[in-house]
Image 1 (spheres, rainbow, N blue to C red):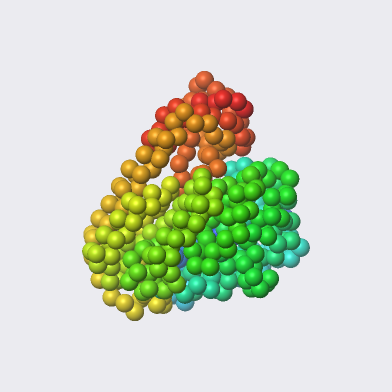
Image 2 (image 1 turned 90 degrees about the vertical axis):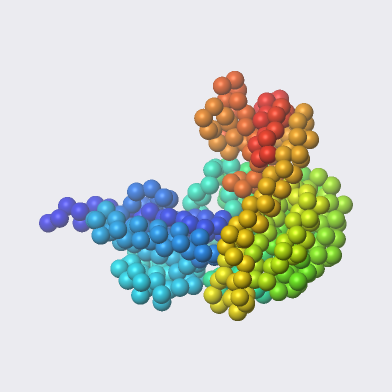
Length: 435
């Protein structure tokens, strides 16, 4: 008898893509653990579940390469079974089954019960908020809604995630309380669109009411808002942000472009004038708010004039945080009917130029912080530095605060007060005042 068949199965969950996928993997792992399964995240295991991303070309490539890498391991006898789930699997299941047929099974984004069954586990409805978090212990993502009802021309998310579906406030409070009990201090609210929260179940935009409830959860010190759509943004959220110290003065609001021609073709439901006015209202309501946005360059039909309009606007708006991506031509989206007519090298050059402008803006804004004091949370230790963040910075994408670890001892996951002594374009150097 082969000794191999006697070993206990260990399930390795591999996560690709965005924070929403991280959250889904954590829910899957929580369910597996509740069924008594041995489950790990991105470590060694003889059964592998790959949670894929199918958003843009680079992400799809990474997902396919990861599947192929594990198929090779299966062939070499290093793993026994490989299952694929997530957005790529939802979007391209028939193609994947044809191209990589030796994967044990493919599952879409809504097929968690079937995936669990294939892994020998039962789906437990009563496990609201029971997740195995994979982030550092001090922060966790809280997904408040799934799917999206927006008609943006370039975006494939509705194809992969379906219609917008809000999670009831009481379920989110239960989940937040369970996270707080585990020592989580920062909740990062995510959804395809936070702005739309509540419209489907409460018949009104209800993000402010959700925030009012979440600030009452003991142990939670920071609540951060990610991915709010500009059109129809509920302005009462700003009032709560201003009043409640737990809500970070931070908003991630992807604006994508500013040329009216491009915004119209992108089906964003707004104009340059409306967007600029909205941002002015944000700044007036919460004067020290940090705004993060993302932009797309090289969209079909983007002329040099459209690009110059965008570039000038980025200079004028002086966003605290900004990411810029090149357009990806995605099949089955509305924009796929347009000619992808901006050459790849032009797209890349435009993205690089926007990021250079932003780098200079970020450096200038950071210089103003020298001598100021901030409350920071310590995420990790790296080399000779403790690495922390202010309330104006989200993990992995924003500025970090570096504190000399050779002269100070800090605990990861704890808050401390620091004074900024030096600043680069994306890093702040600080010394501890008190902890």
